[in-house]
Image (cartoon, rainbow, N blue to C red; front, side, top):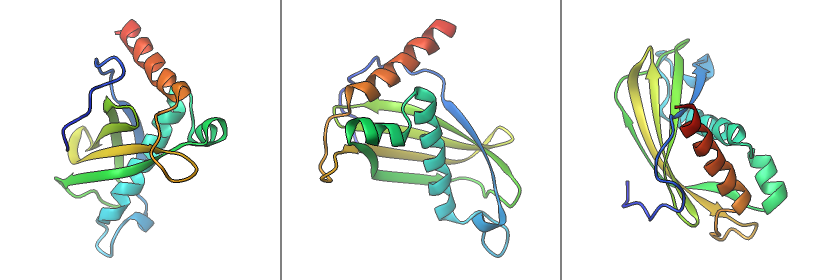
Length: 153
């Protein structure tokens, strides 16, 4: 991943967000192995659930701020194949938050074993498709989650 920008929030990470996803037939190739593009859909679902847990769903972010996160860069390493009917746990961690970007790491696990690793940089975009600062209400939700995490550990 590219060199991260200086973090604008507390750099101490909390535990990763966890999202379980079952592999369905539609996610696989003819041999029952998860098609590579399905990992991108799984990762997007996990990031969406993470944002919802933080208190700002994508729909709320759009309605309240006119902004949305889009994928700027993505890298994925496949370590072991996922297969039909597997239950995959996706652990999502925020690696860094810049003024207009957020770097995220996602690990895909099956029975506790890492089978894939994804690094993605998300850019905050306005309605005109231009990069813009991450809105304060979204940044505050991320900061609040980190504060809650520290208080429970």
